[in-house]
Structures are given as structure tokens and as C-alpha cells.
Amino acid sequence: MRTAQLGELEVSRIGLGAMGMSHGFTGAGTDDAESIRTIHRALELGVTFLDTAEIYGPYVNEELVGEALKGRRDDVVLATKFGMVSHDGGGPGNLDSSPDNIRTAVEGSLRRLGTDRIDLYYQHRVDPKTPIEDTMGALAELVKQGKIRYIGLSEAWIDTVRRAHAVHPVTALQSEYSLWTRDQDEMIPVLRELGIGLVAYSPLGKGFLTGALSTPADIEALDDSDFRKSNPRFTGENFERNLRIADEVRKVADQVGATPAQVALAWVLSKGDDIVPIPGTKRVSRVEENIAADGVELTADQIAALDALPVAEGGHHTEAQMAWIER
Image (cartoon, rainbow, N blue to C red; front, side):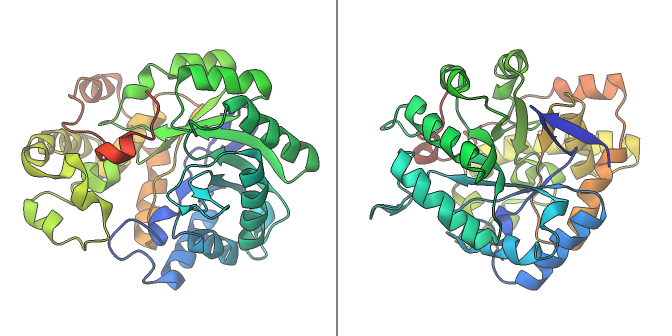
């Protein structure tokens, strides 16, 4: 697989998001053995970039990734996140990027992942109670100590990114970016000015762009733990309107001789060698399909047609979740 550049960090052009193996989607956590096989298959196919977070589960996804990487740690760039678990008693779902919380969080992640260093350590969401300068100062100390190698932010916006980068270089910003979530088009020029890469989560529109969810019955069949059941883009009239986007992706896929998932990923890849999608899956067959997108080449006309698609109807998170996303 070809590689991409996140600041000074070289990674595979397509990464693997591990969240859905343990958290958020129907069936998450029901087959750890298949999830581990999926990680191993990704490594065999050239993936060197794995993404997790302490909040996924919470905690169990880091443990799963750590188990999968036994004896293979040096083969990957390992990324995890802190800041959505408060370790002073607040617990999961409470933003806390205070220096004390960071120092506690990193030790837990290192232990669960079975490693002595984290390659890319992200602030998962900006904590309005803690100045970003204080957060970055604590992270810079962890870099000096060798516990983390590079620093990332997630769903931060322009002013925060600039302030953070002024304290210590930011290597990557992780944000949702796909054919149906394109607000990062405003951020990308800033990232390139500063030499920061973009890690695109949900590049398949949480599965919508693959065509796997094409009727209201498909949504109803998801279990109640699946966050898509409450996602505005998957409900009511928004769902019906958004089907036209998936339909157009399928048309291009038919032209190319690829799957809709591969076309959606190829579109993200066409936007630059400093943008790395991290599609998530817990199945070997899906990881094979996703990684094959590295060989899909879209024509200029096909990219233009995809660029011209409308953005999705509805917010890409619930109203409560959007309150934690800087815009």
C-alpha cells in the first residue's frame, strides 16, 4: 500500500478504525476473535495505522487492540485518544483535558494497549474548561518523557488548532470527512499552512455510502445500542433524501467496476496525500474491500461529479454530540 504523511509521521494511505469492534454499532463486542483476525488481515494487507480511544467501550477497545498487537507492536503506528473520560470521579462522557487527567489517562492507555509508547495521542474533544495551552503543555511533557511520540486533536476548529500548534507541533487533526460531511474543506487550507495532516473518520458515512442501509427497515433492524438509530441523517425525511447521495456513489462505482465503499474512499484519497481515511469494520471481508480502494483511480470527471453531490441532510451527530464539536 502507498503511504501518506501526517506532519512528520508516515502512515499507510488507508488506516483502520477499531471503534466499531467494541462500541457504537450493532454487534459490537460480540466477536472479539473476528475483530482480532480483522486487525491481523489489515496488517497483512499493508495497513500500518490503527486508531482507538479510551472511551470506546469504555476501555475494552484499547484492550482488544493491545491483544491483537502482541508481538506486532513495531509494525504499526498506534493512535488513541483521551479527554472524554474524567478520571477524578466524573467518569465516561465527561470532558476533561486537564493536565492531571491527561497524566492519569495516558498510563491507563499504555497499560491496556500493552505498549511503552503511543505514536499519536489525540485530544478527543476540546475541553472548554481547560485552556488548550494547558492541555498542550501537558502533552509536550509526555513527548519529552517518551510516553507519546506525536500529538493530535480531534474535532477542533481553526482558532484552537492555531493556538495548540503555537505551543507544540500538532501532527494530525481527526475529524469526520466524507462525501456527505465536507465542512473540513474550510479547515484543510489551514492544516496545510501549518503542516498538519487530516485523519478522516467515518469516511463511509457510518456505512450509509456503502448502500448497506437503503430502507427504513434496515435502520429499524439495528439494535438499540447502535448510535445510527438516533443519528439525524438516518431518520425520517433526511434518510429518504440522503439516499440520492448513495445512489450517485453507486452509479460511479458501476462505471469504475468497484464497490460504493471503494469509491467513497477513493474520493477521500483524491483530496491529497496528507488526508488519511480510517474506515472502521469488524469483519475480514470488509477490511479487504476497504483496503482495495488503494487501487481505485477515479477520473477527473468522476471526481467532479462526486464533488457536485449535495451534502447530507441533517446533522452528522445528535444535537448533544454536536455541542462537543467546535465549528
